[in-house]
Image 1 (cartoon, rainbow, N blue to C red):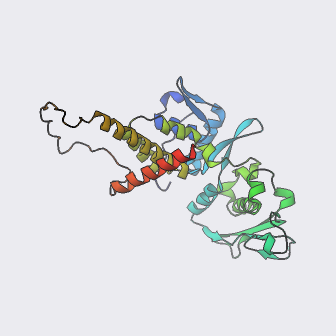
Image 2 (cartoon, rainbow, N blue to C red):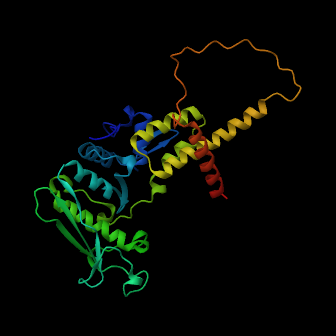
Image 3 (cartoon, helix red, strand yellow):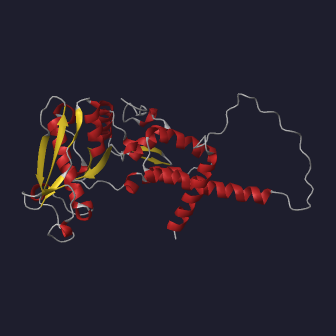
Length: 307
């Protein structure tokens, strides 16, 4: 597997899980960290999820694979980015043709702008197609999907119909081009599940971040999760909460500072710090000022969003 190896649990038995492994499984939607301990939502699905992660090398923190509720039970789905990564790792993936949409099956366009193409804003494409290029094949392997057969309802299907139908076409074409690697894997769009919004999928991890009361611990957590790959809203949560802790610590330091004219008894000089002592980690070791600035900006945005 390329990149940083994911520290996955070896089984659904939580007794041997580390704190980071528990957070990973919670982020993937398969466990929940409670004051009483870690609770696995569905041990069977968790075991299958871990097996698929090991076989594919997909990263739950990068939203490449996760579990979603469908039909009253949890199901494992792979994001379209996970499909692309698996195909790329074969060494035979040579890219793809531009996605194209049509309203009549005759004229195909690479940008769906119905109000400028003889239709009305909000019109849905009748069909979509894409070709996957694979080493050893002369021509791209094309897949066409129609709205009548594969279109969905609600959420992004209403807001971004062309984008969603494009994902359906791409995932079908990917499975056709790489059957040995992608057979049996489905995107949320394929499975008929609404792709979870990023803020919902990472809500549990953000709650974990906001429960940290020590800046040094928060920085250590940031390094751990950053190595695994973080969604933008999780990164923002780290910076916003780091900014909040800094404001609190600065206020406390100001409150503890001596008043003007107050005599402060001298203290014995502190023992020298050994040269090999570890320094407090920082998010941006080469540019501490950048971290402080981003913390302040994210904290201000976070406070403004809360009203």
